[in-house]
Amino acid sequence: MSEAYFPVGPGLGMEENFLSLDDILMSQEKLPGRAESALPRLAVLLGQGAGSGESVPEGSKLEIPLWLAKGLHDSKRRIISVELPKIYKEAWRTVFSADANVVDLHKMGPYYYGLGSQLLNFENPENPEIAQTILQASTFIARFRRIMDSSQNAYNEDTSALVARLDELERALFQVGQKGLNDFQCWEKGQASQITASSLVQNYGKRKLTEVDG
Amino acid sequence: ERNQADVSEAKAGRTDLIFLIRFRHCCLLRNQRCLLAYLYDRLLRIRALRWEYGSVLPNAIQFHMSAEEVEWFNRYKKSLATYMRSVGGEEGLDLTQDIKPPKSLYIEVRCLRDHGEFEVDDGTTILLKKNSQHFLPRWKCEQLIRQGVLEHVLN
Image (cartoon, each protein chain N blue to C red):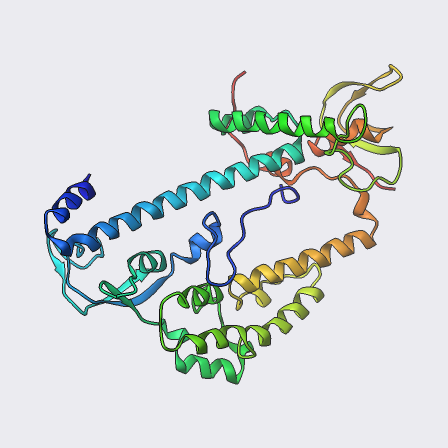
């Protein structure tokens, strides 16, 4: 299954891929926000009221998933205003500029890069700095070197310690590196021309699928 | 239906309900997106099955596919076959063969399961019993290896 199955990958930059499962998971992440105007009858849906028909008062704080924030956001900002999650704020940005390799990005929201790119969609005076931080020497470039090194040199080892602190984008990169390494080793051993059973068939034997008569 | 009721109310003049409609609309779009992505992913995997497993799917897998997916698989098979026939001369070119570069014409295989009898080009039949080893032409065994019946043995 692994050789012929090409799933839809996550989108690049400020656009998401509609059919990408990774993007769907990423847009489920919650953002802090504020209700700009009174929102009648939404209280129940957002988990704050006791009965239907109550309104969420103006200015109250909400935690909403990204897809909802994108849908309700209006350039005239009548409904919702979105604030940046902590990790994209000033304090954390200085941490990143100090030493980016130390931060556990998986704990801080496993979709740091993806969510950050999507945040640029909402107007926010700090946008250029966020963009800088995500891409520039503060985070991605600094961590990338280490990811590349470790993925190319960990052959047949338990990599969970290395991978634990990476967010999803970095993990994908790591796996690509590992796959390249494994393929190369396979070629060196002369196994490149060995025909193998498809991985689906190998799982078939392990899991008991329901038996069908006839 | 609740959305429809709200829409008519909004048109009647309560403009503060617009966001509520918008909210429900967002939820509906979200559900639609999740469903579409799931179905699309299933199709991608079914397509991969044609390349990895062959043109006949085992019953257990077909049982889990919906009627539309089976139909899609058959149509994909047909398009692929038409394409393969049009490429490469008179009899066409089987693109699903030789996925890894071949090193020799005949290969050594070991049988993993009882599969019954197997006919070779010059007419002789070989009985495929568990753990028996044979030296067979590559193009005949490739599909059986991919299906897990035989195992390619390297020296």
